Structure formats: C-alpha cells, structure tokens
Amino acid sequence: MKKKIVVLTGAGVSAESGLSTFRDAGGLWEGHNVMDVASPEGWRKNKKLVLDFYNERRRQLTNVKPNDAHLALVKLETKYDVTIITQNVDDLHDRAGSSNVIHLHGELNKARSVSHPDLIYELNGKDINIGDKCEKGSQLRPHIVWFGEMVSMMEEAVRYSLEADIFVIIGTSLVVYPAAGLIEFVPEYSPKYIIDPIKPDYNIHHSNLIFIQEKATKGTTGLVKKLLN
Image (tube, rainbow, N blue to C red; front, side, top):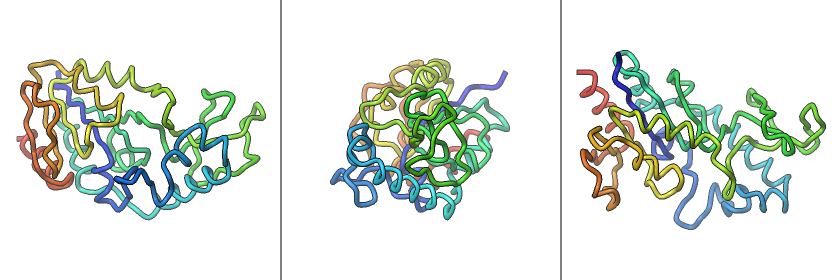
C-alpha cells in the first residue's frame, strides 16, 4: 500500500506563477480592503464591486500557469497516495494534474447560489453579473469562503491529516485558521516538512519537524526529488 502524503499549500506556491498573494501587510488585496471584497458585509454593501473584483481575478487566472512546485507535486503520485489541501482559490494544482485537491477556501472558477449554497456551478472563465441566477431564482455569488463563513471542507481536510505518513506545508504562514491548525492533527511520528523562505517561530514544539528555507519552487522540487529517491 502506498504511503500517504498530505500537502498544505498557501499563497506562496501561487506567487511564483505571478498571482498576487491574498493579503499584504496593509490588509489589502489588489488595492482593495480585504473586508470590502471578502466578507458577507462587503457583499451586502456593494455586490457589484465584489463581483467585478472576482471577475478580474478570474481573468487574471487565464494568464498564468502552474509552476515547478505544482508540477513537482504531481510527480509524487507515482510513488505515494497524495492529497493536496490548498488555501488558494486558483486552479493551478488541478491544471498541473494533481488528482486529489481539496479547496479549503473555495474556487474562483465556480459560482454558487446565495440562497441555496449546495447549488454550485462551473464558470468556465465566464463572469458573474448582477442578475445571474441559479435555477431556483437566487443571485449567484463567487464560490469563495469569505471571512466569518464556515470552512465546509475542513472536516475532510482533518480526516486526511490524521492519516498522513508525511505532511508537507508550502508557502503558508500558518496564521489563517482553521487551516493553520491542521498540523495539530498529524500523527506525532510523521515527518512534517515546512517550505518557506522566511523561517517562522511557530510550531517549535512539534516533533519530526524539518524546515526547508527556500521559495516554493526550489524547495518543493528538491523535496520531491528526495522523497522519490
């Protein structure tokens, strides 16, 4: 039976493809206050601003492609049972060819009904506009988990983390909860690799912690090579 590798990825893995990270130090995303475009309050206040913002992010996605980190993780599937848990709303892991991707914070390329959240639609690059409705007549919104909303995929992510033989963290500062807490569920004996150019001062109490102080592409390609050999 193949060993199970669980990989948690954040903005750092997409940054090298040219996508701006979700939040900078000033609480901005592409020049907008994060709460104006990523909260239920922002949506209630100005739906058009929110829709325009995500339509633009979706267009941006068509101009970028998976980088060496995304592609390296696919290679792991030749030897391991690999699950990618990503905090990113882009589709770069999917496009690279990873076969099991859990999108914790939603997907930019999907829309969902405001009143019937189980009605989710593929957008195929199309915009969402005011007046675009689900079959039950409710306005569509981005299929994104906004601040203050439940992370519905968390339970599944925890289940995979509990079974991880190897746990890898790439390009996330582990400050956004609940995703940051996933490392707490990984078995004590399992190696935990953290790939980040800035060495953090967290999780020092974890056993079997291996830190790789590199950017996502260099650190991931090196680790994958090691794990495959």
